[in-house]
Length: 412
Image (cartoon, rainbow, N blue to C red; front, side, top):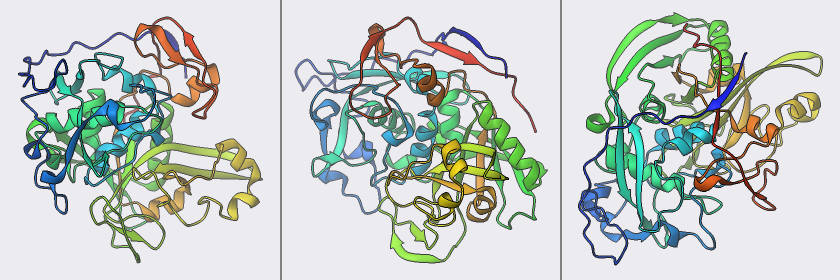
């Protein structure tokens, strides 16, 4: 694939009317159009909105806060809200740090608590202005959770909640809505297969209008079908071309008797959650240990130890039998929601896949690490990506953001 390095120009955005400021917090902005109260949360099952305490985002994290700090999928953990589709989309977006940064029109911590973001409504990019009040329960963010004192996850979730009219409105949506809001790609596809490898995947084209219909499709049209071999090659090509992709479950798999915390989802005996959305982060076909292996990497937006428990799961004996594959994939055993599966197990476990067939025109984070290209907060101050840990980071200066443009879209 031929790449061209060039400056990353911003997309024209329709300005938003200036929200009224309630003016009840000194020099800090408080958005009267999406106020810090129960109405902005909505009636979420099992969640008492009247008991939520709204806290300024910088007051939720100890020490120095950052808008961005080594952006990665593990920055995201789900809370009480059933918006796994949105957080799984954010986990996909975090594979492209420049994409996350591009959603913010101001690139540093806002001292006045006022942030401007851009989201796509299916027709055009819209400016969304929010304050930095975040709903909390017992001193912790009630919904998405930040890591490494980063605020971008909290603020994007809040901007999406305002865009969709409330936090409640975001429960039970689909990937395509998030992919469209973050990339502007209005051509979204839903592939379903609940029968296994020997059956084709049904392809459905979906249309979204998040402002009026939150995360649900407004129109779905049958667009053909593909067999599992064709579909794997399509996903592998999509991964190479920086498509946003996600997977999920509808199946009534055998239950483990455990339940998740974000919507009462049952955790299957295999570790895969029923009625849940996962980020689809990597599609790999590697020659290793004397055979060709097809592997899929997914992430549970809960960001914990609820992961796949079958072959090639964290710590499973298959990795001992495939040391070359483990090295090629850079496997690391952590309770972080990240896991690998074979293509066959993926097809058996997942009921659907969502694809936004539009290359994200900014590099993946693994490429940034390889080339030591930093993230780009404002003022050209950022952090080296050579060190994948949260410590020992070196602050550096650099020029404008760079983006890489890959090959044309592959349409199947």
